[in-house]
Each structure stands twice: as structure tokens, then as C-alpha cells.
Image 1 (cartoon, rainbow, N blue to C red):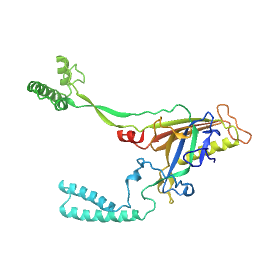
Image 2: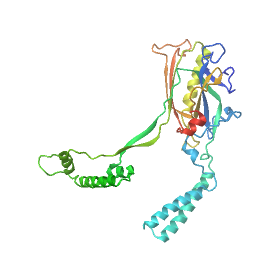
Image 3: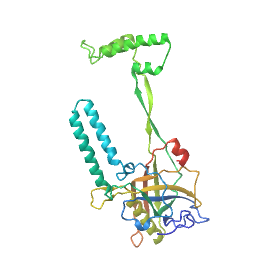
Image 4: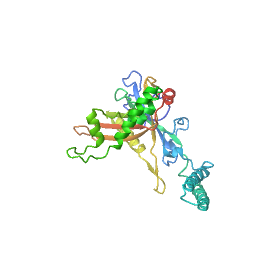
Length: 343
């Protein structure tokens, strides 16, 4: 492990190549990968950066929205059960007497369960902790970012088109009412034809074919959601000495360790993998001209040792290593997050 010279974050850093970030060298652009570990992890107590605690949002992990230790959780769960029982009662599925018994049973049951969870050290609210160690690598190519949102088209049908048009013209309404009636008639006629020679056509198809008209499906485009952004980094390591070989080994081991989950003490649960904060730097300062990246999970990692013509140094260390990393953001973008955080 080595300390990157003039590192403004003042944390210990695995870096490659040796001259990264040094004055008057070619590697003035670089990328730093900061690592935020889960509070329930047992491995990193001596490597937590208490002077620079992460200020990131909690990235969408399921555990972040569940807090069994907070006051009133059991009561809220009991209220949800009570609501379900109330619906069943209204629908006549259960009697008033049965509803009362089930309500008491469910509230007591959920209270007991969550009282047990309150005493559990495993199912506590998750708190991310940043490691002192980060990874800093040269820019592997021009930064690239892709934004995407999803739209889907749906058929509203004639009635939906009529309602969506909002027309107040009496002539228009009269015309549409007539056409609406025709369309309803066509829908009723959509039964398989029994006339010989018409194959699988129905009477509506036959009528429209004869009149040379086609029902307008009134298709409209609806907003569906936002895509999670993905970021890929590809590196070719050509270590020139043992120092760089050891640095590359540490970098690979650190990435693959933190992309995987940890087992709980008894092995019944997975503790979520670490999250990564990725930042672009130029001349030892964060580069504000590129997009910023929300907290990410490392989802794919591929390492190829030895190059196309496999070769190693005399100590067995490979002379060439290729590493490909794929990250997925854990936060969906909105206008607010883009304006506030520069994503």
C-alpha cells in the first residue's frame, strides 16, 4: 500500500502507475474509487476513515427503508394487518367476532416478532462507513455517460380517445358518438366467422374490409421510469517492477472483495456488498467539468492474466493484466439530483 502524493482526500491509496498524479508527469487525469462498507461488517474496524465520513445518500438498499428498532414499527405493522382484516370484514369473508380476534392476534404477534428484532444486532439500520483505503487509477479513456428514460405506447381505444380529446364541439361530439357506436358494434362482431372461405376472420374484419376502414387504436405514449446508469472501466496493467506488481495485486483483491457480500455470524443472512463512490480528478483536484457519479455497486469484474502471449516475471508475477469493471448506480436520477449533485 502506498500514499498518493498530494492526495486532497488524505487517505491511504492503492494506485497505478507509480508516477500517477506527480507534477510534470503525463498521468494528471485519474479516477478514484472510494469504498463505503456496511456498518454490520466485522472486517474493517481498523480501517474506517473517521475524519471524512461519507455524506452520500443510502443508495436504495432495502435495509435502508426498514428500521425495526424505531419506536412504533410494531404498531405500524399491526395497523397494516388491521387494515387487511377490515377489508376482509367488509367483503363478508369473516365475521365481526373473527375480525376482533384476528386483530388482537396479529398486533400481539407482530409486536413480539419486532421486539425480537429490536434485540438483534444484525437487523439494525444500516450505516455506511468509508474506508481509509481507496483505489486510484489512471484514466483509461475519455469519460462517457449515458442517460435513459423509458416510455411505452398503449392503446386507449375509441372511448379512451374520445375522453382524452376533451372536445366541447357539439358537432364533434355527435360525430364521435356515432363512430363510437359503430366501434362498439364492431367489437361485438368480433366472433369467429362460420362462413366458408373466410378462414379465421371475424365479422368485424369482414365489415371493415368491405368498407375499407380500420378502427383507430388511439395510441398514446406514457412515461414509465428512469434507467439506472452504468459505468464501465477497462484497464491494462503493465507493471515495470515488483512495486507496481504488488500494487496491481492489491487493487484486484480489493475490488473483488468489496463487490461480494459477507455472511452473517451464523451464516443465515448475506450482508450487502460495499458501495463505491467514483470521482474524476485532474491535477490532484476533483474535476468539475465531468459528470458526477452516484454511489454504485460493482456488478461485474473480469481479470485476464498474462496477455495474449502469456508471460510472467521470474517470480511468477504476470507481465500484463487486463481488468474490466462494470458499475451500476444505486440511485435513480431526477431533476433535483442532477441540479444538486451534478449527476
